[in-house]
Image (cartoon, rainbow, N blue to C red; front, side, top):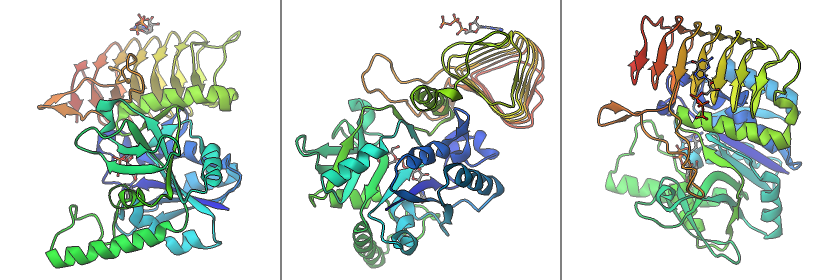
Length: 422
Ligand code: GDD
Ligand code: GTP
């Protein structure tokens, strides 16, 4: 039996995801029609030996999270529970704090998954690899460019055996282009390593009077990536399973558009019936498009590629949407045009209005390039990015909104370019 933990973090993080995370915790933000962590649960449901799933974070329990859990349990027929940390315990401190729950029933291993990732996760293959090689700890790795690798955990492997020889979290200089995808399969022995490291940590802190870097972190917080993986690297028990499957982390809103595209593409193989089709009396569909069954799309609209239309959305005549996510209950009035944008819940885009952003896609000319999670500003100037229309925003007819972020509950009175409207 295997148990799984999805690390969902908490409200302090996800600043690059505002204003979308105002309405809903980031892990529940819909990409390709489903919440970000729904996709992890879907992938876990395909691993027969996974019998329990835990969401671990420091969000206050809330209605959205509860509803999500109830729905996912019903759909996947697998027990799912939320384990709330009393403070940020880090990626290792949380699983250690709840070790009794995780160890009960004596699972063979525990999947630990960073909730802010997207991909065609090869979890079944990872379990096979873990068992075949008799690993104690397996990490999922993928290639990145030399430049980008330093934004991730970097793994040096023995090319023959795939044993992890070195692990460095976000090194200052290039170490290896094999990066950590944030997905691990760990035997219960992991708790011994965390316990030892925690006791070492706490005694040095006490002796040196060192303060924790962030007051939100609890004393018993610990990051697997900084403290545990480097230690495991010399044990001959730690292995990397490499994948060439699509993978991305989700940090900024721009990466949500990218993850949307990634999952729509995965649907082609895993659940083609989720993709919209062309046909008589139906809107024109280009490439991969998801339309929620409750949405009402005019047959003269043109959607795609890489578009998700949420529940209850109304898409009027002549509307054009491309590379965008339109969230629940929004209204796109006739002939408006939405390109590289996210339209928040309950917003109205007027007739002939144009909402346009700049894609932040990975460089297509570089093998293994990942998306750049750039910050909102460079030297006080807003970086061109996708346009985000917050929830309950009204964009009147014929206005143009480009590379801008509009906070919720606004009624725009003019066009905007490269601005944040607070
Ligand atoms: N429950 C809980 N408690 N979750 C947490 C905490 C915590 O205190 N801190 C972080 N997380 C969750 C985040 O929500 C996220 O899903 C995951 O742990 C990792 O978050 P970060 O700490 O922000 O790390 P990162 O995303 O910059 O880097 C990690 O992921 C990369 C892959 O996306 C590292 O694991 C890298 O090595 C890795 O390459
Ligand atoms: P590429 O050749 O791939 O660069 O795209 P494009 O030249 O078709 O232009 P663009 O990416 O700007 O537009 C994407 C789609 O939206 C095209 O099918 C355009 O016809 C359509 N489109 C662009 N602007 C508008 C608009 O203001 N209103 C409507 N209804 N459609 C538009």
